[in-house]
Every structure is written in C-alpha cells, then in structure tokens.
Image (cartoon, rainbow, N blue to C red; front, side):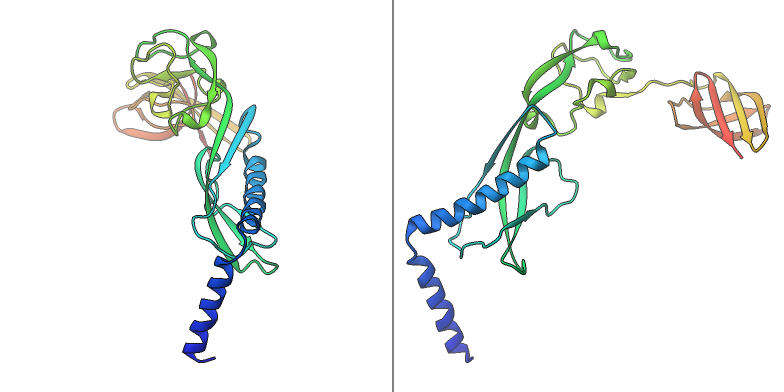
Length: 231
C-alpha cells in the first residue's frame, strides 16, 4: 500500500469512527468501564467494608474495545485512591489502553484515644477505632491496630491522630552499654556468655557486643537483654 493510500485508509477509519452514533460509542465505553470497575472491585474488596470505584472514560474517541481484559501496569500497587489500569482489547490482546480510576475504601482504622508523649509504648487502651475513607489517609498510615501495639512513639502525638510508619518504631530490648547475655547455638551445643551492648536494638536487630576489653561480636536481639548467634 502506498503512503498516500495508507493515509486515505487512516482518514477513512477516523471519519467512520467520528460518524458512529453517539449511543453506540457510549455503549462501547460503558462496557469497557464496567469491565474495569468489576476488576478493580475484585482487587480491592478485601481492604474495607465498602468499596467505591469510579472509572474515568477515555478522553479520545477510539474503536470499541472487544473482549476487554483489565490488568495492573504496576505490580503491587496499593488499591486505594488514584490508580492506573491497563486494558487489553481484542482476541489477541495486542491493543492496549490505559484508564484512570479512583478507588474509595470505607473501613475502620486505629487512632489515638488520648494525647501521647514521645517514647510511649503503645497498648490497646491507647487506641480506638474510627471509620472513614481509607484512601484519604496519608499513604503510610498504619491501618491495623495489632501492628501498633508494642511499638514506641518517636514524637508527641495528639488524640484522634492516625499513626504513620515514621511516627512509631520497635521498642528497644537492648540499650547501649547494657549488660546482656549472648547465647551461641549450634548442633548439639548451647553456650551463653555475658557482655556489654555497644548500641541499642529492637527484636531482630543486629547489635555489636563487647566481651572484655577488645573482643567484639555481632549478635541478633532475641529478647529482653538477650542476643543470639547461630553456628
């Protein structure tokens, strides 16, 4: 096909699409949007008690998307707020379109029941449940109260505040210069020895421990003033 003939073909295709009856175009867009809505609902339905999905129609008039197959362009994307959705069209799925959508997730999340000082170890009585649109919370908000209990606050916080990841940390089980017990474990043996921690650490942290004046060893925090080394 010559370049001129190819251009005429594209122009004819564009004109035929432009001349399609508006209800027919609306119907095609409606089926596409319905497929994307159903897909996003299935992806987000476990996140809250109520899911609200709004899909924005394509901005340009395009041929109808036959047999739409929605997918997420970014694996692991959080299914809240503004998201991008890809759609494969046709039997071979070679045509790909991208739509924007907004996902609202109505559910419960923990907030502080009272003002909290820095360095407070959170307990269940410090928290209460609040209901709202989880998509409107800051992206790093902690939504499960079990993830907060036992954590230590890194700053003073106000009552009613939803907690974000940077506002809490694991409670140190080992303090700097604290006398600690290091347990060495291996096949058929277990030996413990006392030393002094050179740095603080929470559960699972690696901490350097000094024995005597020169010998040091790196061990993993496994409990209150206790570290372990596996051989």
